[in-house]
Image (tube, rainbow, N blue to C red; front, side, top):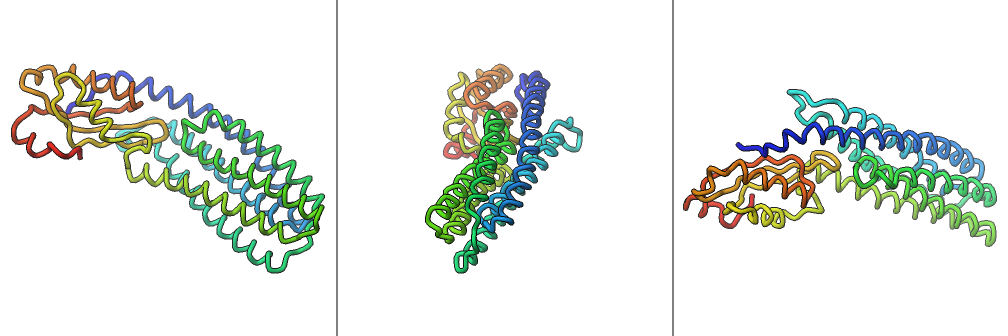
Length: 314
């Protein structure tokens, strides 16, 4: 097995980059944790006093954000721990497990909200429109602030992306509560409150599905969604001296950290240049696809392996 030599030289720099990204993400998560905790308390009290399921549902959603942020901070700290002989990739996967748990909890919460909305739609309670409107407006302002803090980090960290999706769901649900409270104030139609709660439940479920899907794919070591295996294989074959590629695997270790392993075949004249060819492939994969960790086995082209692997990448 031949690993690209430059990976070893870049490993320390990659660790520093991930650590800096982790610290920046954690600072933002602490700010969001404080904001979300205050919003959850205010909205629950307002929803209870105002008899608004929509507002209490929004409070429950924000509470799941608080839990998500807490788990997120914990996993970011675990992710900064150095790797060991037993955990050779460190604790990077803790982030993915946290994202999966958060998404699963959200799906359960969404089902409960929709069920409660159905019960209240049959016999809606008296909703205090003005109180609900005031509290929901405060919640909207807080959620927008949280979303702003998270927006810059959401593309580099799946856990932060999960919390960001929670927060966007909160923004939309706050808007739904505001609209429903205005309808109650101006028309007196009480059924709008459980309807708004049901809409919030659907929004929560949609965001949760995306999070569960992405984290599950990573845990199953699926090819990253933004990468095509055939495109990567073509890039490898384009390197001078490479005749073929097979047993190619690409997967995500954690957010922003991708790995690749595979076998390449080279002609007899190029077998002595295997190290140089691997370095060139590694540079191309990093520059074109952002794949940092590359492990390749160099094989001499023979009639046997041509026949065995000519129509298969894996």
